[in-house]
Length: 242
Image 1 (cartoon, rainbow, N blue to C red):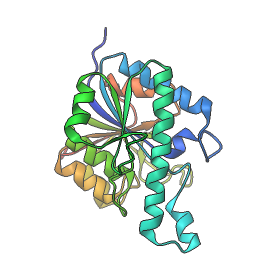
Image 2 (image 1 turned 180 degrees about the vertical axis):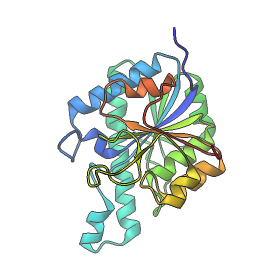
Image 3 (image 1 turned 120 degrees about the horizontal axis):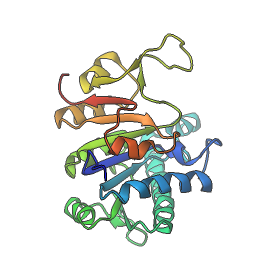
Image 4 (image 1 turned 60 degrees about the horizontal axis):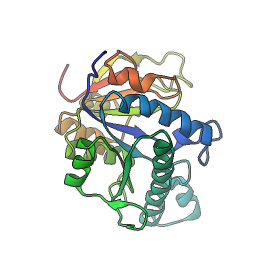
């Protein structure tokens, strides 16, 4: 049996990943497919934490169009991530994968509050932990949440699953036919080049804690497992200079 390259990982899923081709809401077939792939990774004995976004339900841009105060819009986005986390939990448990949802904003009736040591204990007991509610603070993205939680639980890697994008490019490949795909970068490269991978706060946090990032295409079946097994796909972003 092939051994996984990583023992403990943070999988970053965008909210849009759960919406399928519709771009909004949660599509049952889409979330079921993702959870079946997560089940394959779970069966390898990998300790898996998930950070999920909320863009399929609420986006800050909508709040801006409404003239909404930024903090208020961000809190609405945090609540959207909780809805997605509960949907992921239910779908994963239908695949016989034990899970716990932890939220950075307390809502004890539906999820545990985020407690670092408890999250690590869940992982050690082979439970998938889903982190919801972002960091619990406005002005921070779920990318930053992924970097923060990865540092806190001492994860080996952040796996950033993208929709129909197979890595990091010098420009948007859908708009620029001359865009170049990078196989390897550093977090400092991401910041200096202004590449649209994750926000600067998340890149800085990952760089400071030397946490590698693998950016890959979620829509290609089996890619989550391929990354876990160490196959060369997508783009690897390293904390230190290459």
